[in-house]
Image (cartoon, rainbow, N blue to C red; front, side):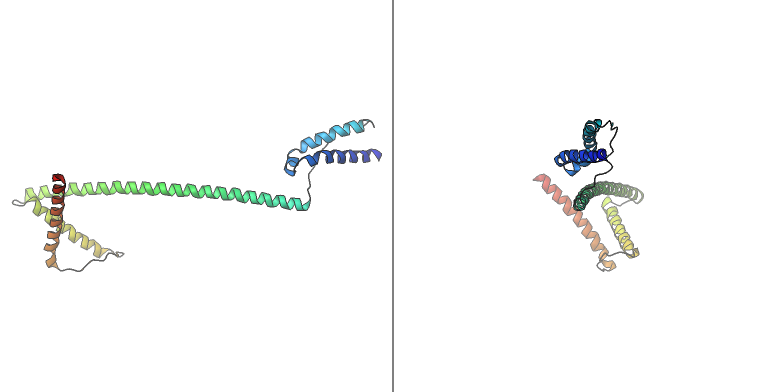
Length: 201
């Protein structure tokens, strides 16, 4: 019985000497060091009684309930902080990827529009050459006027066939077709004159 009391006293004394020097986190991390110190002291004391201490097992560290609650709250707050950081990084990546995708989409859209315009230009040139060759006495200007009017009527047809169209189209009569042709032609002439003026200046 005396030896048992001695063991308990030694453990308590060593624990009181070592544990206050550590905070709780260090105590959990250095359980092996505490065990080693207790084992060395027990070997010295119990050796006098003929006992040999081979090993000491520290099963667990049980802090005060209020300390445990505080530790749980700290851990929860740290996890929430990490989760917020990860969420912020994820949102940042999404924003960057979205911006990159929009930039790529706009670039590809621009390439598509440029190719479409080039195809339209090539098609108009081919139509003018073919029409002028097959119909004698027609000029390139007259063929261009005809193509513009044809495209105008195609546009009206497409607008009428679309069930989800929100375009506001001003009503007009067949007699205004010539005016439309003149407006298109005058616009081209004004653009050509403006280019010539810029060159002269």
